[in-house]
Image 1 (cartoon, rainbow, N blue to C red):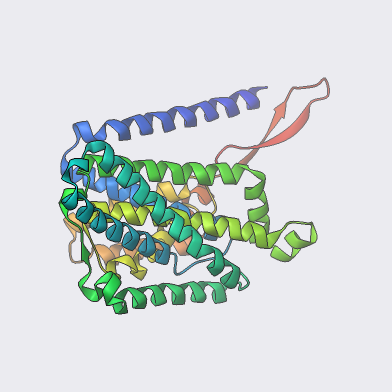
Image 2: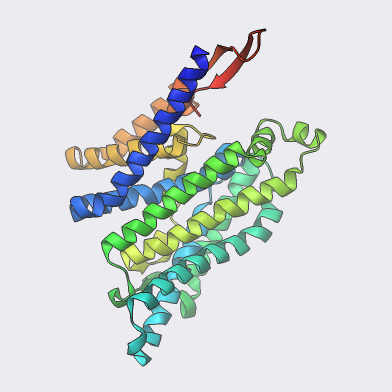
Length: 346
């Protein structure tokens, strides 16, 4: 009985902490400086991206080196649609109302998600037949193809010059922050729901032994495709909001491998295949980067690299993997007491 009480207390503590963090994030634009708000916007952006990578690579076990391609697709979708809307507003200035802009932002984000989603379906059918380093390298190649297309398709993307977006059709910083906060929260909630759902259990089974998963009747192809397309939709939406924040996109910033490397490092640091690992990793990496950049501007990348090496060698399962444990507690449900195992840290 005591063990059950401790478990429920820990659960309510986690719920209370989550609610407090959400409330604090919601009031942040009212109390913090624009610089701090920009930092928080970038934090929620990387949380959403890390959770998307965690879904396919951490939970399912298919490590992707080219997940940035979906971010780039979303970014260019957003830039093109917002630029086109400027021409529409120029011809019909009366429609430039807050309601119209709100609908425009929502529809643009939806289109970024939808195009990334649709692109990921045939891509997943082709690449998810590969395993291990072959899948990772194939995704890296796909990202490079995306960068080359954006560079060479000058009529659509303006090539290496990039696409500037007029501030006239962009939301201000607090609105952009709230949208990115929403995406980070939804991405974390989606991973949590999948993790505790039957799909999450089957994906983790695929990660541990795909052959055994097939033998016990798990539809591995279907489950991998579901995880892949869901993990692709999140970066598509984030890419659109990123353009709203920066008002510019070019092939280098849209398809940079550095962004994919950040996702990997953050997930590995916090704990791959967990719910809160990407959140913890993002807070540590972003906070450390901000501090090191201010204190050691010439060495901050090297210091972060040393941190990553330490984690890989001494904490291969991340911080949550180091501190999580299972406790066996006695539960007095029946006259015959029995032991049950409760996982206190998800």
